[in-house]
Image (cartoon, rainbow, N blue to C red):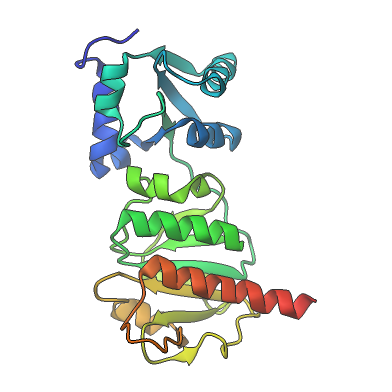
Length: 260
């Protein structure tokens, strides 16, 4: 049982939770909560170790025991120390340190999303969750995009990280992957082809720009066209994750209509 705040494992967890440079240096990230730890382990992600409290639920205790049978180290920690570590208001008494990995992209993708300077981790996590639900085959994390393994992004993703291929890329690399294999659409708040009128049945890459300034010049030069969401109200724009959700499920709608 860990009872000291100076324990080396606790210090390592704190560094991973608060510092992107440490997540990048060690190639590790922290997963909090029974459901997300369960999904990470079920998805084959390697756990360095688990930390748990005596108040852990029966489901969580079973998860810890199964992990131990797979040679994953699991160590108890006091409730007070766990609350000091956890990034959530009501910690569930379980967290794990996992090793990053890059899931393989399909050889001939027909449904991709690229992000440009998407800096809000909650928005990115929500976009990942939506993309996984819509059947997106890969996320291209363009320059300026926040770390997808930020604790807030992980919580908002609700397990999408463990199923959805993601890769950090610069715009030349994104260009090479996306063209000419897919048509590249840039999401715009105002001018562009209304999404209901754009042909999204063909292989497509959707570029989602940042919350404040939208997409930058490199992303714009890659796009073969702009796509917009008609807004009869007085709003100038939508939250990036909300806009992405509408566009992604317009792709789903059009392709479902095509196949029916």
